[in-house]
Image (cartoon, rainbow over all chains, first blue to last red; front, side, top):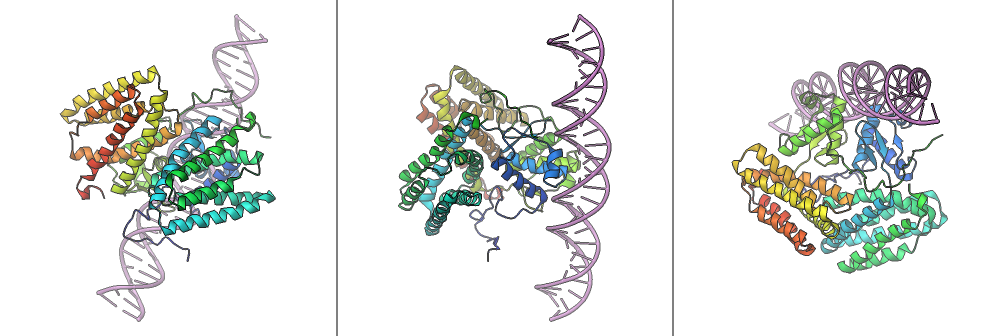
Length: 245
Length: 245
DNA sequence: ATAGGCAAAAATCTCGAGAAAAAGTATTGA
DNA sequence: TCAATACTTTTTCTCGAGATTTTTGCCTAT
């Protein structure tokens, strides 16, 4: 019974569709190409600043030129690709300052969202937080084998955890922006994890956030979350300079 | 043999282009169509929820089908248009709750940006604020004739004023998001102005913001700015219910 | 009379080729 | 040797036609 999409007529807001539908399967070739491209950009297959030539990529992704063009346009929405006038597309460049900006903006949005979540969340929200935290903890245990799949699993569950935390925040716009920023920071976090495969004690940080959230201690929870997010910035800051360029 | 991606030397940051290039002239047909469409959506020519059929619109805007498709895709970035799987495009719906969400998120972002602007702004920033305020005041005087051009001029300068206010905020991301939200609220503000052509004493509010900003009184400035933005929400709230649907 | 299903129509999505623009290369002259 | 110009190549942008999918209308059966 997971074929959801049951639309209730009353109360459009709660079940209003997200600004970017990202959960379902891709229903069009353009969207499929978009997802592959997004993955490849985040994974670093296409490096920051690289030119994305339609003629070359259309063969690689097995779609027509116009279709690939649309996929690139979708990536512009996520700010993973920049389009310049009559000069084609490029992978969005990265820089330390940009990451600092992303991180601080994330803190601003995510703390506000968490505050509202704590204020408004019901039992179901608490349950989803505990569940997501459990899944993340399990993924952390398996992370020690260093395999690629386990890290991907951890990435997925880490994201799910952060999403669920602010899941009771009623603002679709904050969640939308937060979503974009999370994708962005994923590119940087990849660099950090590559260098520092076993991160700092992130488990304890998550635990502390969960405890404060369930205790409805918004001030404490947002404080820890802020430090948690900002710590990633510090980790990237300590990378060799030539990693980012 | 992939080569390279010639990276430029440093200093990319200061002159980094905005996330959405909006100032220049449109350099491509798709972008031209995008701007016309955006204007028409904000102006209400295409009403919220309307279906946007490519076959009809391509004649109206005098471009090919693929080109119009790209224009629509660009509008998805601004969240003025929603694309559903294999079922084409629609003008993004509006609702009171959505506007409340937009407004509150705007307050969150814009106050944070203003705070940083006040903290970091230099003499040139102060000058630009005073200049923008002056232009806006002049536009307000001419607003009494009720002509369409004068209201458009006011819209333009009001936007410029709010942009300049947070112009010294170094965060490109906050400015980017704020930009999107401003476009969104423009749709709603149009409804409000239509009903209430001579708005409340918005001049005094702007004046108070400028005074507090130049006095480097961040707490006061952000407080007034918050109330200022929220007041628009109240104005729309008092519209007849059937205005929004 | 209503519900279900089949068929026609409309709309979307996709592709490849042609026109416009940018980038790269070679040539010429000081 | 260097700079400026003209030419060639590459790439982007645009268009119209064909293939799929969705929607609409009609018909039949219970």
